[in-house]
Amino acid sequence: MREEKLKKVKAIEKDEVDLISDLPDVLVACIISLLPGMEIVRTSVLSHRWKTMWKYSSHLSFDQKQMLKSWIEFYIQNSNSSSRIAMAMRRKIDPKAEELMDTISEAAILIKSIMENHIGPLKSCSIQHLPESCASGDAVEWMKKLLNLGVIKVSMELELRYYLHEITDSDLRKAGRTLDLPFEIFSNFEIIELKNYHFTTIPFPNPSQVLKTLILNNVRIISNNFQGILSHCSSLEDLILDQCKFFEDELKIDSPSLKYVKMYNLNIRKILVFAANVEVIEIDSVICNHKDLVLQPPKL
Image (cartoon, rainbow, N blue to C red; front, side):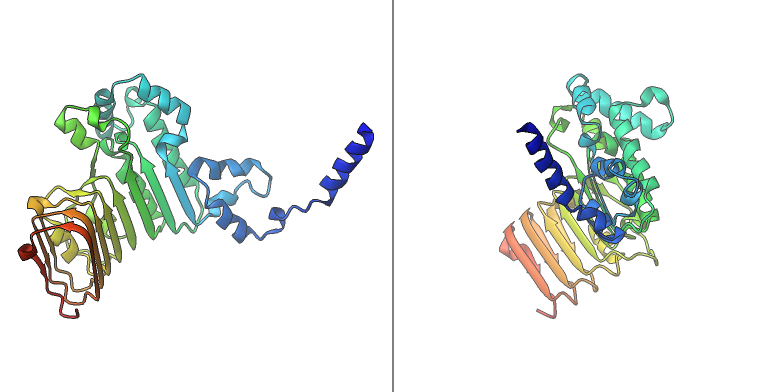
C-alpha cells in the first residue's frame, strides 16, 4: 500500500511543470523585483541560474527594521533611544569608527551593499528606515548612491512607530527626523516621495535638474524656502501635499511648470497658488480661512 502511494507521489512530481524556470530572464527579474530587499537577495540560493538574477531587477524595496529583524528588535528593546540617536550623530562625523557601530548601522551598511552589488538598470527604489539613519546621514548616502545608479523614482519613509516620542532632548529628536538633503540630489530624481520627515534643502539654479513629481506626506518644511525649492525645480509638473507643515503656516505655490496640484489634510493659515500653467487643483480636508485661500491659476 505504501509503495503504491510513493509511486503516485513520484508520478505527480514527474508530471509537474516548473513554469518559472521556463520564463525568460527579463520576466523573472521583474517578478523578483516585487520582493523586499533581503528576500530578493535570498533568491540567489534557489538555483545557479538565479544566483545573480536579483542584480537585474528594476526595483528594490527595503525595510530597515526587517533587514536584521530579531537583532534590531532585541537591540531596540535593550538600549536607550536617546543614546542610539546620539551615537548615530557621532557616526555621521566619524563613519569609520568601529566603536560607534551597532545593529542598526549594520543594517544600513547592508542596504548600501545591496545597492552597490546591483547591476541594473535600476529604475525605482523604496526605503523605509529608522530614525538613527537620519541622524547618521545614512538616508542621504543611500539617495546619493541611488542617484549614481540612475534611479528615476525614489520613495523614502521614516519609521515613526517606535521611539522618537520617548526622546525628550529636542536636538536629538530633531536629528532623528530631519532629512537634510543636498538640492542637487533632491532635484535630480524624476519622481521623489518623502514621508514623515522634517525636510530641509538649499535650492539653487541646477541646470541638470529633472524633478517632475514631488510627493510630500507628513513632512514639515523647516525653513521658509519652499517657494524657493519650487522656483528652482523648472521641470516640476505634479505636486502632492498631504498633512504637511510650512514655515509660518503659509504655503505659496508659484511655478510656471506645474500642471497638477493636490493638497489634502492641511491645517494652514494661508494658501497662495499663482502657478500659470496649472490645469488641475485638488483640495480635500483643508482647514484655511476662505479669505486667505487664494487660487489664481489663469488656465482654471
